[in-house]
Each structure stands twice: as structure tokens, then as C-alpha cells.
Length: 88
Image: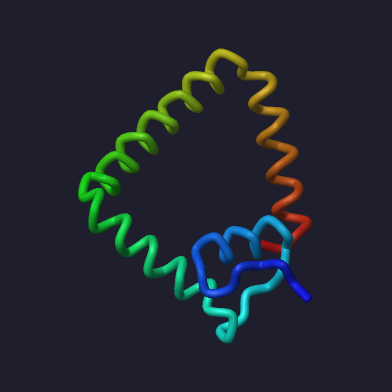
């Protein structure tokens, strides 16, 4: 028997860590949805902070690519080959 605390947000996290698939019957996904809905409601600036962080992350990645152009080009080419091999 599983030692996952079903029907809780902690149970949802345990599913993810242990690689155990979620099922509607266990209630963990619904518990996570409720938790996230409450969290977003109590942190109204969450989305704007996420946008700012995404913008800063993109700028930092662009700066790193410029500083390490050869490494970036090599990584980019490798990822492009992987994506093409996946057929995406």
C-alpha cells in the first residue's frame, strides 16, 4: 500500500517525487488546485512578479549567450538536433 497522504497538497507533492501517477479518485490533484487557488488569492502580485522574473531571466540568458558565443552555438545546435530527432 502507498504511503502517500491522498487528498492533500502534500500528497500531490509525494506523487510527483515518487513518480506515482495521479488519479481523480485519490483527490491529490484537486487538493493542489485548491491550494494554488488560495495561494494566488493571498498573493495578488504573484503574476506580475513572475513576469518580471521571466524578463530578467531572458535578459540574463541573452547576456550569457553573448559572453559565451561558441558554447551557446554548440548547445543550441545540439538542442536543435534533439528536437528534430523527436519530430517536434
